Amino acid sequence: NAGVMQNPRHLVRRRGQEARLRCSPMKGHSHVYWYRQLPEEGLKFMVYLQKENIIDESGMPKERFSAEFPKEGPSILRIQQVVRGDSAAYFCASSQARIDSNQPQHFGDGTRLSIL
Amino acid sequence: AQKITQTQPGMFVQEKEAVTLDCTYDTSDQSYGLFWYKQPSSGEMIFLIYQGSYDEQNATEGRYSLNFQKARKSANLVISASQLGDSAMYFCAMREYSSASKIIFGSGTRLSIRP
Image (cartoon, rainbow over the protein chains, first blue to last red):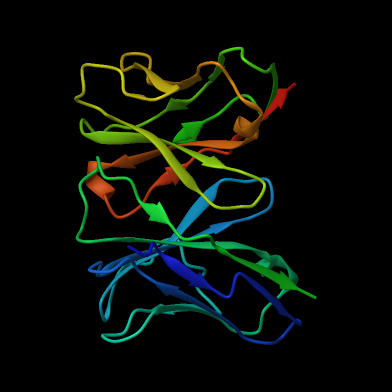
């Protein structure tokens, strides 16, 4: 059973470019969560999506960031016009349903985004 | 107010000794879950142990145990017989029933095991 798959593992972009981060959930999972980890900090929740729906985007910056989880294919976190402050590790987790509080979220290995 | 507080930015422990990593939390929910994750230098997040707010027994998973003191709102992680491979960042985290969509993480403790 493959776990949560994220790619690329490392992504380098210049300021002003676009970054696209992909997350394929575990098989049978239709709920996806994105988190951001700045250096030397814990993970911060960004957005929670079900197939074709954004459920909770309370942690997403208001500008330049968007996320989608289409009916077919991986979830995409998109960052437009990247700035140096976007440099971070971005983690994805998935679940089968809206999980109860006793269910851990299993994470992918993350994408390390570096902005030059 | 911080939801999850880890007051030890870094710790050094001698190999084979036990170590306790502190975690306190703040919530008004009656139902919540507490988690510990390990993040080695390679960067992945590894789930270690879970404690539910209604669980009466402290959770244990191999060498990991969670010292859950509900009245004090603390959920310390105890690692027995530490090994060199335990050197990593450790994050305490919580999910509240009222916002089951997200996990809230503490700032982490960097644990270094000395040979």
